[in-house]
Length: 230
Image (cartoon, rainbow, N blue to C red; front, side, top):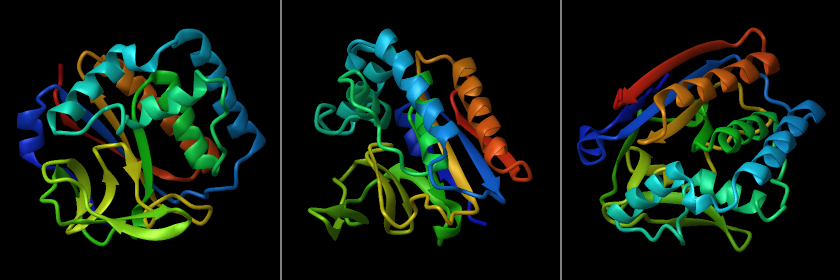
């Protein structure tokens, strides 16, 4: 199956960046379950107490600086965990989508780290984190209709060949690779920028793995690490 790659120029430009990839084979995704919804709601309640202003959290502040560095306004393009926590601190419940998405969202907000998960079977090439040349295609829903957009030149994207699966590093995922109730093989990406502790990223990844194994006890798990080690 295709793999996750990181263009060396990303690590040169952002030497404080690290990521963990979790590959999972043999999953049985389900519609949202009471237990997975409960885990998500518990994480929301915890963070309503701990996080008052998401943008001021040290990890989110680091992501805001990175986004500004490659030319996007963080207020318009918040990283994924800032977008989630911004809803949580306004006493909004995050939507339940399916078991796997609910669980990685719960881990993301609990540990204040961007996490994305996608259907591994939908990749047609290796997936690379790289800078955009401005011509790639990104499939989203807009006003209820499928739409193709292009990222900005120099934007950090996840792309397979000329097709983007996630824009602005971890801001928004596309349609085709999203996890559905029928997804059986998936990859999950945890993104970290200093000063976020590497140990905390490892704890978050192990928590997510434990949930994957609870959903699918016979699934096969593999992890891979890229980037800064301090």
